[in-house]
View (tube, rainbow, N blue to C red):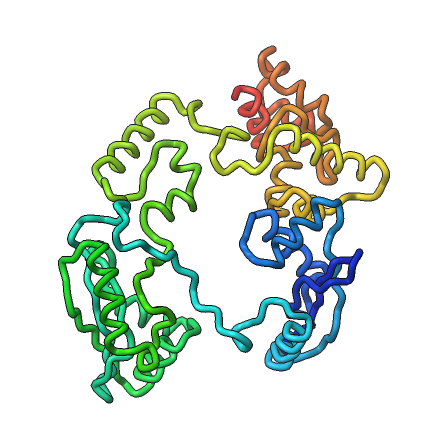
Length: 375
């Protein structure tokens, strides 16, 4: 049976508790610290991430202390909630419920979609013929009831999903009834607020009084995919799908004509590192090899805010290729000088297979470095 341990993460200089969590007993002792630092580097919202960002700006990392081990999941969760309450840090679902964050929409905003494709609907319990939820949907997306049922089956938390799961166990399914259709986004938001108010939040399973919009659509997409915005792409469900299609076709045609135009390295929209940081990562790893004390990929990854897999790709030359590879990777068969000599020897007329046999490596490895040099 899987067991868990409870970890308390705190500021080593002041002793202030930043976060309390559970993790598998088999996981690395610093796993929670790594996850917390990664979230802070990825600019995730939350008090604990803000505190870690402030802490790391002073050159200090949070410290994880094991509070208890060998617990089952329920016992671990109960202890986590007790400690979070004691230290006044963010509570889990078993403490205070935190409804899904939505964007508060101004129903009179000119930025709302004027297309009449929105509707306001009710979810009805067929066993009692009672309305238990009011929401807003769009004809551009799948029916909202299908989305609610899918999430309820997946075990999503929330009063609404608990009611749907109860109906499904009884062999029933909630009924969706549209009270108005072919509305603009502004009109749908206003009607949703009015209808929720007329029924009452104390009767419904809604978390809010309506008039809010989930973080979806064109604006959300551009925030989630800045690299695609930089490349001229657009969301297929954006307000101007024709423009989106033209932008995608234009980008694809340009890349087909000249693949070198594809943004790479620091020029890529999602790049987190620059050439100087790549060279520093390789230098740190090389110094560790020279001193006989290898620096782990997890530690390097936590310092720069990327994954250990990407660190491995950087060290092996799969990402951010030549120049400035480390002189000798832990599993490397070739030195930097040998790698640099490959294109020269091939240009002199030597066959790739012959060169691979001479160097004691595979033909594919010689071909890989030959392609890198040609880029």
